[in-house]
Length: 96
Image (cartoon, rainbow, N blue to C red; front, side, top):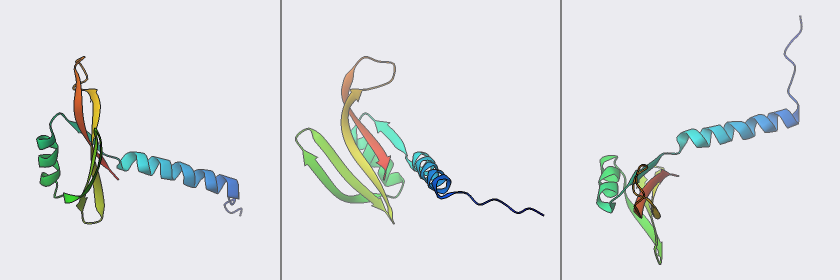
């Protein structure tokens, strides 16, 4: 009876790298809002509370926390919706 063949170190490293990449891609949540009020309401409804912020000129960045999970609220200059050509400040929420 022949048992399983063991993977080489290179194969194990490649498998662990692809697992980490796939896991990170699945866990990232990105949500966009046009107004800051809507973004804050969304975070409050999910149970997150304000932790700290970092601001430099037009770049605004805030951290929100819920237990051991962090969410990042940041402003970007982007299209307001996918079908329009209007540009403005868009608030994006991303899980860290």
